[in-house]
Amino acid sequence: MKQEMLINVRQPEECRIAIVENGLLEELYVERTAHDNYVGNIYKGVVVNIEPSIQAAFIDFGIGRNGFLHISDVEPCYFRQVPGWAEKERREQANNRNHRDDRNSKNSVPDDGFNSNRPRFKPPIQEIFRRGDEVLIQVIKESIGNKGPTLSTYISIPGRYLVLMPSLGRVGVSRKIEDESLRRKLRDMMNGLHPPKGLGFIVRTAGADRTQKELSRDLAYLMRLWKVIVRRLKKMPSPIDIYEESDMITRTIRDIFSSEIDSIFIDEPAAFDRAKEFLQFVMPRHVNRLQLYESKEPIFHKFGIDKEISRINHRRVPLKGGGSLVIDQTEALVAIDVNSGSFRTEDNAEETAYQMNLIAAKEIARQIRLRDLGGVIVNDFIDMKKEMHRRNVERILRDAIKRDRAKTKILRTSPFGLIEMTRQRVRPSLKRSVYQECPCCHGGGVVKSSESMALEVFRALVLASQHPNIAKIRVILADDVVEYLNNKKRIELATIERDGNVEIVIRAQPDVWPEHLEIECFDANNKPIPFTIH
Image (cartoon, rainbow, N blue to C red; front, top):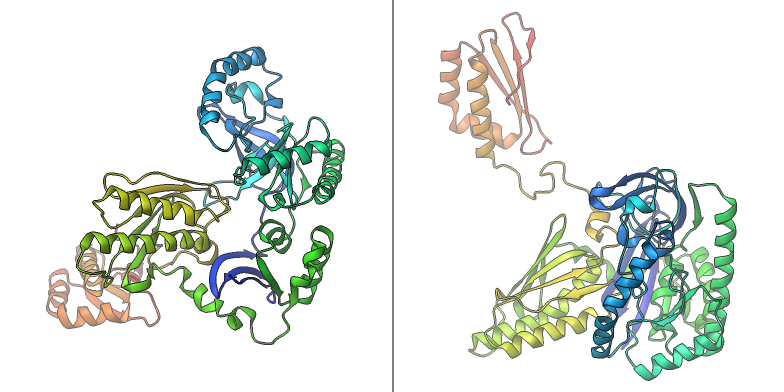
């Protein structure tokens, strides 16, 4: 399987990175320079407000918009000032120890993940913080709509093969590495490096096949970085930025590049030099896979990616054999409907539905990655009667979603044939990042027909004609609406003029949206009279 990473930064306003497998677009990342990206950045902030009703604090960290810190994202080191917390936590741990042991014994992969060290008992947030308190936070989710950035005090700093997590306090291994013997080997290698006490490290999936020397180099890099952060934390007044994530090219190469990617093409010399310098530092044996794309033809057009990108935000996605997906996105939920269309296999409705659902499951996982959809996602598959078919569709969907770096959780098929899932929302979806709301339909996707607008105007004219001081009414509308009024409502308009003793002037305005409506009213001396419809 041929994999390529294409990096398009020829336009300074935008960076686009595509992962292509055998000519098919599998992952797409887009970042605009005009939009500040704070995710991953670490700040020294100040508590400006506490909301006990939602157990959250709002933090000023110097960007002009306060961040949201929930109690679940507050690290235990902040609890020590709360009287009696340590004793309550010990009691809670004792009560839950047996339950945790039973749970871990049933799992093939031990709980070495990012949340395993979080306490069972947490005091109320109003007992932890006061206004004016300083707190070290990291942005874990961008602001979406009216919501400010989401913050956490659980700091994590990624390297190429390791993640530094000061709050973890021990060595762990990514849950995505499932081989138990490999997990033990990696833990032994890390313990052999004697990491500093009090700091925690997680071995990433990229570090699974690395040598101890390579892990040691990454550990030394993260330790140097942490010392710089600690120095800035002590010296700088809040609110202030302490650490900023790397640019998108460096982040993507660091987090996504693997030995399976055959080539990296970059179409801008300065970006190529930065990427080469980074690769020489962290992955020197793979530098030869980096290539400067020098052709005048746009790189995404050359590899046939622009055509696929243009279809990403279409509501309907065609599938092999004649079926399709219909994807509708709301504020907090995404609905994906599977349609069989002209897809047929033999003369068996159950087999047709099953085969269509298998194809759809793989494409759903791909579309979720490409569109960067997040929140609750409801997949409406074609109804299947056989339990075996339902389980297989679930398995295919889970397998296809494994390559997604965002955290996901997939439920079993509901009695209505729905598979519900959640996907970590870190930033707005690609659609919300690239498009803006239509000023005509306000995001609804529809506008009133000419007939509907004409009837609305007609009712407004009747209302205005009843005003005792109005002698003249001037209406400005879209061409189609004027045409409808003149052709279908001419007699009724004449009746309004006669009964109300008013003059009605209707004008067509080119290049206006279908619901455009301007009504101006005048008295007998041609002086304007205020008039509102509602």
